[in-house]
Image (cartoon, rainbow, N blue to C red; front, side, top):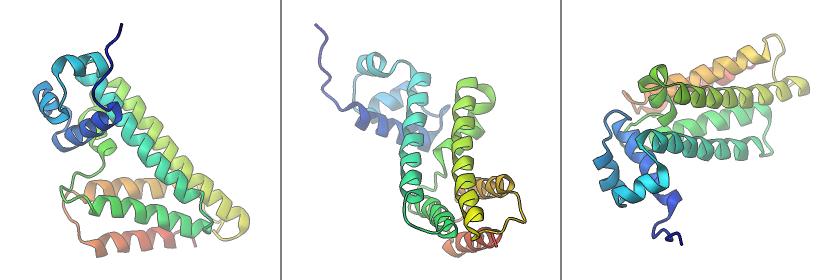
Length: 193
């Protein structure tokens, strides 16, 4: 008969996200995980597999959490421009509320690991496509309603906004001056006119 686990798997996975996010993949040892997760080494291996598998699960958990928040914002009753502004403000708020200035876990994994790891690369590409597609759908709705100008291609605008997000996710590692991010959001939204 299989033993029941005496820990919450999602709670442990959330801790793993924070450990990998703070230390990076290469900087995180198995002992860091054992110490930080509060479970035995055997429980870690039995439940999550090796370090690489745990890292993939941590990335997936992080991505699911953020896409859920995006879906809530997009599902609100805001205009297209207000939805885009709200999405950008949400991202900046999350970045600036992190006192450790870790940036974005997905972007950090992209920079550190994706070039050398096909699974991580595919996961990040899928995430990037989902974020871009979210912007595209909102822009398209705004163009269809006449709120957003049709003089620019909706896909190109979505890619511009997505690139703006990635830039802010990296920039927060060197500055947390809110007015800088507010200026970026304001300019990004003005491109939709």
